[in-house]
Image (cartoon, rainbow, N blue to C red):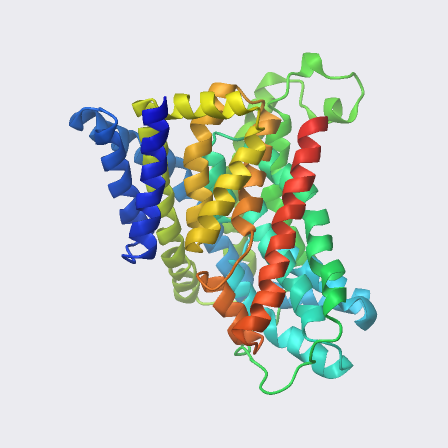
Length: 454
């Protein structure tokens, strides 16, 4: 057991060395580490190759489809002005006095279909104008928005991170969405509007406002945008409920009403609510409603949706390499030894998953790499431990919380916030780094509490 654990630790150290010191792409680094770990633990060369094929194919068969569909869906929502529609309505409803709460909710909603960096860049002018208008500190608006974006980006599918981790841990996507909302909302509140109160005396907005080019089409309505975002999530959740055993439910209870009794109809609900079908329907809906109905040329729609696949492709490949790493850990026996070691310490697997994600995140900066590496190490442990469906989904959220922690100078997101908020690195450390640490710790605390009661 000791040798296996040493090999696992050596593999992580080598991964960090290749990514940090050699600036090697995470996809290639994960593959190389998987090859070396497999050979060093005594696997035959052909078995290592087979593990790579199984790990890559088994992971990408699900992740590539979901991430690709989610990226295209988000791109069309963005092009149709969905972000502006949601933000303007919520700000108007909450008013200037509670704009921070509105912005937290804006970030929470728009980051479901739109990547974190894209949504932040598009919404920066909004918080800058609010700061100029009210004379209040820019951070009182920026931190709630960033908290909403960060929480949803890490906690709630179909964003790439939680999709990848859920697949590696074989977690139910519907349950991940369900617990993502339950954990995400209090995490957003504490790490956003509540934390922002401590930055009331920081400077207000000055200087240039980052304007985004206006669209030549009017924005869609708030209701239309929210309906589009909610549609695939609701379908996936309804499908999850159909997996429950009707015989084990309280007659007349809430869950009993949500489960279709007829087996044939239940099968069709599962089909429609599968992430493949739900997101395909969502993409078809935005293609027609946000494209054709609004007289957007078909060529333009095609370019928008195709271009959205470019950043998604990088995440998909890294996720596939993470699946390879997981499979090598399982086939080499390291996974079983690691599970035994974690079990002997009495540490909850949810806490173990958080710690691994946090350590990798702080060491190399990328939340995506941290989530996938932590999932690769946690998956065999969770499999041996025989976690329930709920606990497996909570492990996904715990990894997301750990990977959100302590963004600093080795994270591209740190410099994105630094640039668009016009801060010095020291100021960004005192605001954004503190905020992500609060988000991660709050997410862990809520997840641990839920693990005791579900």
